Image 1 (cartoon, rainbow, N blue to C red):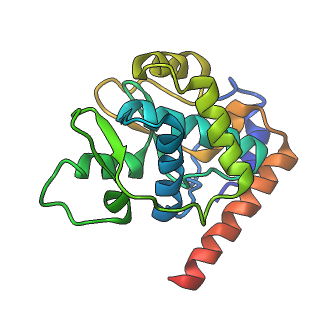
Image 2: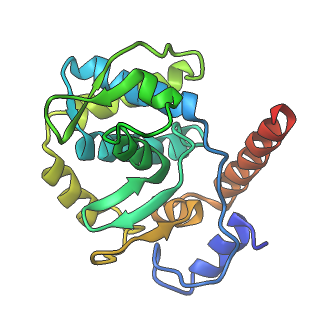
Length: 210
């Protein structure tokens, strides 16, 4: 596996955020409880149902800022580029499943469900905040304060313009690796090494309780 640190050293000879090297994807283990708590906090702060595309864009922005400040994302999700910008993949799957009456119940669906608006979700039950640090809560609150009043398409347009890790896949999708985000944020080699260490620790912790 080529490390985040090695990847950053390679990118200096190529366009930042658009490096084309073959590496093993760097992923966190998806923590559905934490992801649900993060989305629920956005919904609580909003006080109303949120367009699901807007919620996904806000979660991605919060994750991006969390990599910068904390070294790990908040949602622990995987990311893909889609037509309307970066998408938190597992969360998107759960939002789609929420409209299927035959879908198997999940922690997400117990707490966050479709609203009467087919393009919005609503908080039905409080999942708590046990998995969120105060620093992560502040990032979510600040993200909503800065961007929560923008509509989904304005948020998508800003993602296209401001996030070089996003590539337009047309009607398909393409993965966004954590290393792509690290490079786009312009983090140092030391910061990249710290992120890699924190990812290893998170994965190890999940293996212990699996």
